[in-house]
Amino acid sequence: MTEPERTEVIVIGGGQAGLTAGYYLSQANIPFVILDAEARVGESWRRRWDSLELFTPARYSALPGLPFPGHPEHYAGKDAVAEYLENYARIFNLPIRRDNLVTSVVPGDAGYRVATESGQYDAAQVIVATGAYQTPRIPSLSKKLSGEVTQLHSFDYRNPKQLPADVVLVVGAANSGAQIAEDLAATHQVHLSQGAKISHLPLRLFGQSVHFYGDHLGLIAASLDSWRGRTQRGDTLIGTSLRQLKRRGGIELHGRTVDAHERTVTFEDGSALEVEAVIWATGFHSDYSWILVPVLDDHGVPVHRRGLTESPGFFFLGMKNQYSRGSSLIYWVRNDAAFIVDHVNAERVRRDETIPDADR
Image 1 (cartoon, rainbow, N blue to C red):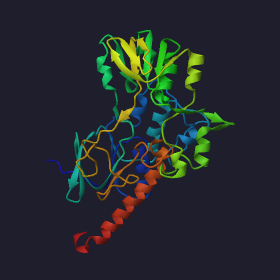
Image 2: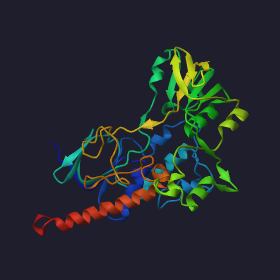
Image 3: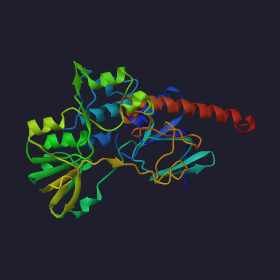
Image 4: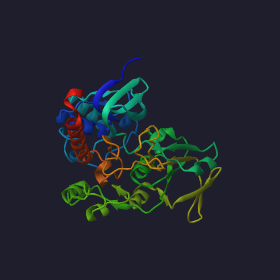
């Protein structure tokens, strides 16, 4: 049996959070390996719908140490983001082991043992950076719809050609749902169902991106427990408003989807709609069932303080609202990453100080 590979830190996940952690670990000269389930860096971005554009301009779409290419105020598409991440990993020579889906993490003799489909790794410390968008969330009422109704989650949507049906209902009116509805509007009769009320901000205000103000006023990076952070709670639709979608694209707006039967969907006001296709832009949930370390609560949710857990040397990075509004955003994840790597280094120093010279 092959001996497990040994390193100081295992970073699980090679997306923007994992790459940012890798950058700071490299800067601190801490040995590490990034384990990524994908065959190629940036693959999760390549799989998203064809017309997707970031709502952050290029200056706020960069990871530390490398500006995003092009004009700093342009809004990049998903393939440009994927290419940027791939270049980032190459430029900084980050040690990524691709096609390495992690199947379990357990306590080990000197830290943690990480098992993948192709081998095992031992590390004194682990950073879980699997991202905010892991497992698609689809409401149970979807099972009430007839098999004749085409159903996709936003995760699986690519372009309008996937939907030969004419009448399409998009359920979920946050950024993904609104963008997909707009993408479909030229070729389909689109209906958009909104659940909770979502605040709206335009892409730009007075010649600056809305993120310029969020950055310079310290809002996006602020702790959600601070007064600045409390202004950032809840989802915000950035870009085209729902009213504009209705006026410009002819998209019909509805309230929350509450029930379904065969081909009929019912909304909270009692109105109903016959549908031929439904796209569930209803978000994602996390699955940490493979973590067999005592860092999760009874519902499988990480117990942490800004990514730090009670298990020495075990950290989380890149989760939605982990510490601030920016915790899961490309540009601002650097703040949590730097914070965590500082603690990784401190844990390493603490451990070295407590190990007798004879055992080193």
